[in-house]
Structure formats: structure tokens, C-alpha cells
Image (tube, rainbow, N blue to C red; front, side):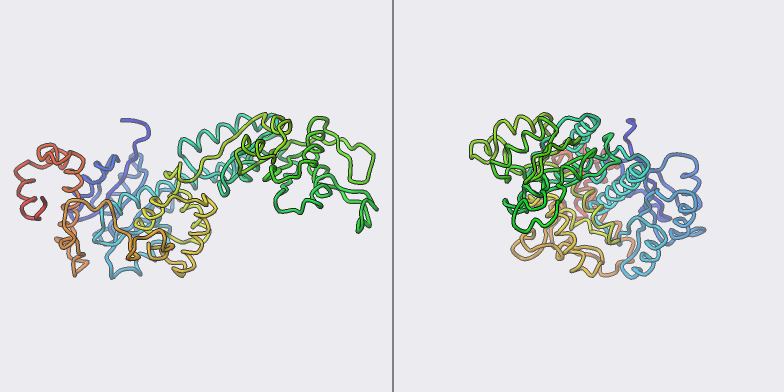
Length: 457
């Protein structure tokens, strides 16, 4: 078994439900552990590695809430997911106040359980990473994601941060270019000096030269006193030039000279001023296209492009969306449903991470800072009826997919989970009944009986 295997402890006093949870966890790629009540669960937790706990609320000897409180006495980071019934939301809220990572309502979809576990594990990992960030100033603060693209980005930052080389960060709007620049500064020997950011597109061209290089008294109308510019302010630290291709061409020539000679002159002055800065520049354009369009001097491009970092668009790293959503919503202490996460995953995000953050902030407001559901998300993310169709619900008709009238009815909950497990097994085996039965750990004869019983084709 690989080191990356996650051990999930399922706690339930109903043998049939516990068995179903065990099978579904194994199919989802986890190593299942089981316990019949809170006391038995504590024995498991104390005896071996447990990465997440999924526990029923009502059990003999020690219930789910008592188990949660006992776990939190010794471990503040172990994710605990509470399973409760529709009519017991108050108990679930009490559990969240006592440190539960999440809760799901009976009857629940297998996909919802898997996403709740994935979300809890991601948030737990984020808590650990943030603790290390506070302890280690040389980490990539603010960068969220575990996708291959983000791992490559983190490695690039670690490589270039200790150097003095100029860095050019290219990426679409909203991908986090300033975050990358700040991460480079934080991991560099210059991190005790200032990080100074200038948005070259937001400052009028006639004022940008003074903003960058400062001016002497009387240099122009209204210059009633001398003023230091961003180059002098960033001396010893890092200067971040955002949207550098929006800088006027004549000013680019002055920037090139400052970078080559580490010397500037204030506007209206003739005294050279030595500066020791590290420049990180950024653009949302393709630099080669900007050169062709007359937006970027070619010699300046070569001076800036000593070390190039290309940021991936969010649609190219969708596996990070759930982790990003958890990060953004943690500030509001707002949860997001598994169905809403699926909606986010199916959208292409032309505005990238910045759009995702804004969408989640709006959704939190609309939801009243309650759990975010698909209906709280923008209409363009939903279908023509304003609904989201769960693409993971396979193998049974919509007529049979209605939730049971009584949410506390255990046979109905077990039946629903059996349907989903059977459908998932058939999907994984391309309809091969023999292989599906082996996955389900039942006889092929039992599988045929259940197919007939539930009307699954």
C-alpha cells in the first residue's frame, strides 16, 4: 500500500450501514476502518493512523458529538464529518461549533460523501500548510493548489527567490501574478525590506515617470516639493511592475537604463541615485505579441525575461478549485455543498481565480452565510431550468431517485446507498456483472437479485 493512502474511520452502530460505508470507501480509493460507537472509535484512533472520521450522531455508549469533543481534546486537525438526519440540523450545528469539519444529511449520495471527505482532507492539509507558512517566512505565501501546474510554480519560485535575477511573470488576468511576486519576495534574502507594487496600467502616463523615479521641486507645474519614487522606496527590497507592457515606450527606455546600471535620476534632476532593487515584472499579454504590436521594447523584454514564469489559467488546473473554494470561504466560516462544488468544477472561469473568489463572495452573501448551494451561484453556471444535474447519478431512473418521505427510515437509506454502489460498480466494470459483484463483495446471484429488485438495467 502506498504512503499516500488515506485511512478513513467509519463509525455507526447499524451493521448494514457500516458495511455499506466500508465498501464505498474502499471503492473511492481509501483504506476503510470501522467502529460501532464512539468508544471503539477512540480505541482505533489511539492505536493507528486515521486521516478522517465519518461518524453517525446517535450511538450507544458514546455518541458522535461526544466522540468529536474527545478527539478535539488531543487533535485539533483531524477532520470529523457528522452524519445526521434532516430533522436534526440543530445537532449538526452544535457539532460544527465543537469543531466538526462538515456534516451530511441522511439519506446522502455516495458522491456527496466522497466530496465531503475530499473537502475535509483538503482543508486539513491547508491548515497544516498554513501553520508551516507562519513558521517559515520562505514559503510561497498565498499560493493555493496541489495540481502539477502549481507544484511546478512552487518549484520555480524556490529556484529563483534566492537570486537577484529579474523575473517576468506572464499570465491571464486574475491568475495571481502579484501573489507570485510577493511569494518570490517573501522567500528571498530581501524579505525584511519593502515589497513595492506599481500598476503601470492604472497610473496616467504623464504621472507614471514621477511615480517610478520621483521628482525634484519645480520639475513641473504643481511639483511644490521633492518626492521620492517607487525605485528609491524599494531600495534593498523588491519592485513589482504590474502590466509593464502598458508603460509608454519612452519610459521603457529609462526603465531599461535603470535596470542595467542600478542608477536612477529623479524627474527634473541631474543627480544619479544608486538603487539596489530586485524587479519582478508582469503582463497579461503574450510578450512576443506585445513586441510585434509596439507595446514592449525588445531590448527591455530580454532584460526582464531573465527568469520567466508562466501562470496557468484556472481552467487548466480545475483540481485546485475545491481547495481554493475552501480557502476563500474559510474567511467567512461558510461551507459549500458537494453539488455546488461540482458546478464550479464544470465552469471554465474566464476570469480565473479572481472570478472564483468574487463568485464565492457573492454566493455567501446570497446564502446568508449559510451552506452554499447550486442556486446561489450565477445563472450562467446552471442549465436552462436554473438547476444543476448531477452527472454522477448513474444507473437508475429519475422516478426512483426521489428521497424517501421519512429521512429517518434506515431501510430506505440503505436501499439508496445500495443502488448507488451497484450503479457505480457497473459503471467501473462496463456492465460486467461478474466483475461488479466482486467489487461489491457479494455473489453474482445476489447482484442479479438486487438488479431485479431495484429495476436497474
